[in-house]
Length: 223
Ligand code: ATP
Image 1 (cartoon, rainbow, N blue to C red):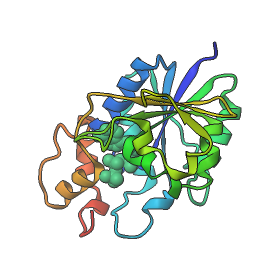
Image 2 (cartoon, protein in one colour):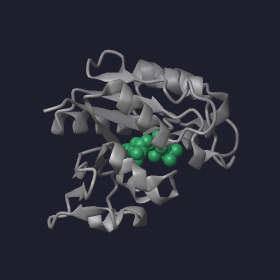
Image 3 (cartoon, rainbow, N blue to C red):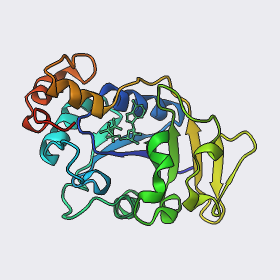
């Protein structure tokens, strides 16, 4: 059987303990050989100016320092080294050829999965990788993947009767719901705390806490 490599994409604006714990649990549950964290350089869905976005190089550095020491975690600068918007479809195509014959498992939260229709070429995504959809506290809207299945996938994937696994009809990749204990933490909440000069201790990895607190982008008005 081919190795499975987790790909954890996100804005990581900033990285927090919810991300780290999700990656750790999914790697253990699915026996992933390793997890690549792929910070988005220019996230297309977070460009409206209403969100305080830290520079990509800072977000990347925070992730790098946060995962240092975990032998199963690595960062990939594949999205930083490409100009223009960071589309997952491009990233998966590139990583697939780089990492073959390993198979990719894209890791994302239920909230992100439910919004897949808004991503570029969403119907192609499950033809390029397996998907691990992790539960995200405080609670999901449903316990079956069918409750979360984005419209773009309804024709191309078949959900098992227990609602925990779906298969792409032609590509053979799976989409698996992965319940994790997880933390009810979001980057939006952390940016709000930095803006309001409140503590973020224990919400972000300690090694990155000071640089995050000092980030100018978070000290302005929007979060
Ligand atoms: P924001 O609050 O700015 O929207 P975020 O906290 O959702 O940010 P992202 O970097 O956008 O963080 O998330 C990257 C991926 O990690 C997404 O798939 C998201 O669903 C998942 N994720 C984020 N926080 C958690 C968490 N606490 N538990 C499980 N998954 C999470």
